[in-house]
Length: 189
Image 1 (spheres, rainbow, N blue to C red):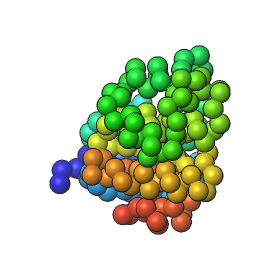
Image 2 (cartoon, one colour):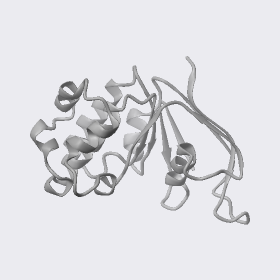
Image 3 (cartoon, one colour):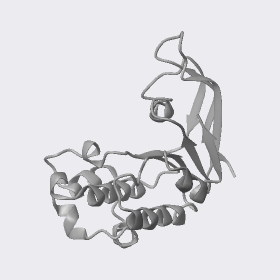
Image 4 (cartoon, helix red, strand yellow):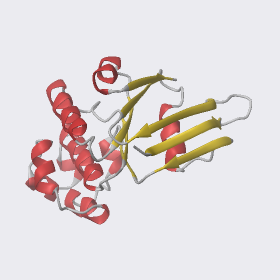
């Protein structure tokens, strides 16, 4: 199966004297989940910025397929003055909306509201819905369940794993148990 992410010999630091990454490589295929774990400040979110092309590496290369991201803070990932449905339909097809709403236990009526009118957990599920509707080959998950209670965390991760036939996932988490449960490989940085 072809790779949907190839990071080869990546070097990056905000100063050349202190590199966050030095000769770092990782690859991912559709159907795989790899988890990136590490202490705060070691560069986990920076790695995603490098993969997305928002930061330029000092060396090495990044190649990726069609990508979508789920952010840790759902409130910062939606514009406050537009309904969720408007924001989702601006970037994604609504073809499989009903099926995904059922999968993540979210009611359609909530999509007609503004972001601040939902709880953090509801808004994070809307963020996951948006990312999945974009039909990415590569899904970047930055602590995607940290805003959810334990029962909903498990439901959401099971739903995401169910979609591995169409995507591969790179997960940032502090939760080693979650990483061990769902990932094919755990990478400590």
